[in-house]
Image (cartoon, rainbow, N blue to C red; front, side):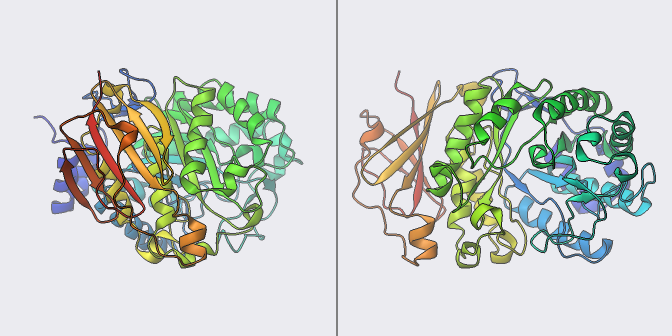
Length: 477
């Protein structure tokens, strides 16, 4: 008997609550792969249909005191995200709730193992795909210096401390390699067969470990990327580095682009008032789009994903004070939309998902607006080519396809500084002519994400909108 579709299984699981059914679905979901039609995008491995990740980070539980509290947090985030069109989440398996080897080499936590299996089963129920980040620590030692901004997360590890005096040795010692692989092997045994899991990421921002040496990290990364392909067959494998906001980022992302075994390119970039690069202190849409361009410059034949983005205080001292003021999610909107319309394989993937921003203000609905804006598009079949132009009032971020052209229009007068910091309400964009792409066509299909309105126009005039709009029309032959 043929199993129902992914969405169908989700509905059945939600309706019945049968864990037995979920165990069958574990092996039946279609895998996600790089598209065979256009390698800059992803595809459903069974049908070959283009898959557009609508993504977010929910990497750890900052304030949960026990597993029950953490499960409630994760369930709330996943349910809110999935209900609003989200389909792809990043999770850190080094977080206490999910760390199967928390304190001592080869000693596994039965509680964390059950939490991990629970998380994957809930992702399947909600129709969510997952990327797992295996490690995040940057120094050796006791986990007593957890950063208040990070909550219960520590960037230290006790597991490797008996076998390495310095962080460099974690990446050169065979004993440390065996420990890392033992943890990964246990994760693979627990949940590696689920096609809810689409990608395995070696380390969060590995260039930020103390005594980082890119030559050593490169050799270790390529070895472990190859090992992950054995442990997690059919899954994509990845490495990542820190926020592309300093001039050192050019060389670091060059290094990332040259790694063997990296199945797609990803960047982290934040609005940072203390950043070296002007682009990281400018408009959020430009900041996000430029990060995607940097990735496509380095590996034009791979998908490019903005895997972390958000707003921080100077030099990442903490999350931005602007979040408290941005109750409408103006910054979040740009983070989600800009990457895709600059040529990314999916949405931008925000950080600060919990009480610090997205969940605090109930902003999950922004993902639904993005999902609606891209509904029906097939980027791989279109072989989209990104372009940018502008007028005195607007920036146009466009994708020109074989049959369809789609453009996201962004009001240049409306920025996080004008609206959020200075409290200036956005002015409606009205009476503008659509000269950037007006070729006397008979049909322009508009979507206005801030009001969730769709309309069709037959001339080169724009509808009145606030902050941004999306338009589709037939590509001029």
